View 1 (cartoon, rainbow, N blue to C red):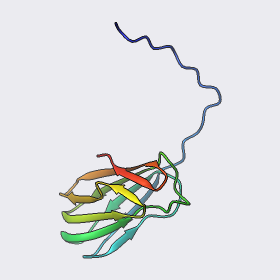
View 2: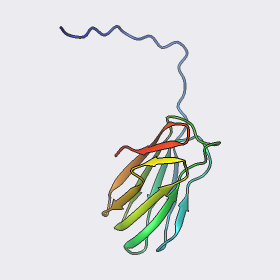
View 3: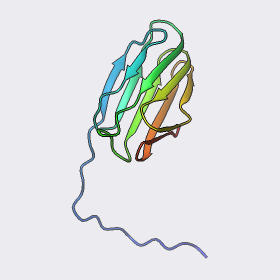
Length: 116
């Protein structure tokens, strides 16, 4: 039997928070810290050369919100980006080829997951 979907009515639309965009030029072994705010973020990493390792720090528990997303893209290869900033960061280790993107999603208190 096919599912029946009732139309939804929105009572009082909620405006989404703006996306904060930022760019960093990380060096080998450096830490990139995102701002402590509840907005979704677009983080562009523009290293001067391919890197072996960097660290990304997500927004603090006090300033972030459940449902928040942090999009990260690198223009060059990064062998390992380790993501920190919460008690749990699922799939915290990321390897980038030039142009690769990942998204971290805050699904619960002190819990972020890499979803792409």
